[in-house]
Image (cartoon, rainbow, N blue to C red; front, side, top):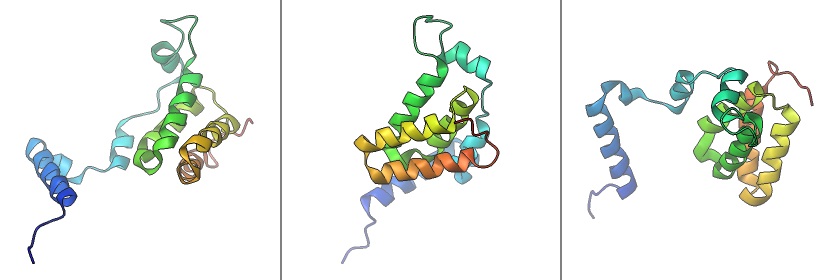
Length: 135
């Protein structure tokens, strides 16, 4: 019997070694740590960058963030940090808890119940007690 590693484990180990050689701080990288580096943008900044400023007839930032949340929901556990970050930004852009829950539930029809459940858990962790419930 050989002592070979699982090809996926070998690939991950190689990637980790490469990241450490590029930047030793990446040895302790976590998705939660990445989230901390990306602050929630103010509503006005999001509207300028993502909203109707450059496309007056287009979608507003809130709608774009809800669409993004829907797409991330389908990815499920692969997009935990991105889902939390998008929920934070959607709230800041004016989305209600109800709109966020509806977005996730609607996309759950296409992405499956496990992905929907995971996204709801992640969204709930962000919305918690600190978010206003204006739904």
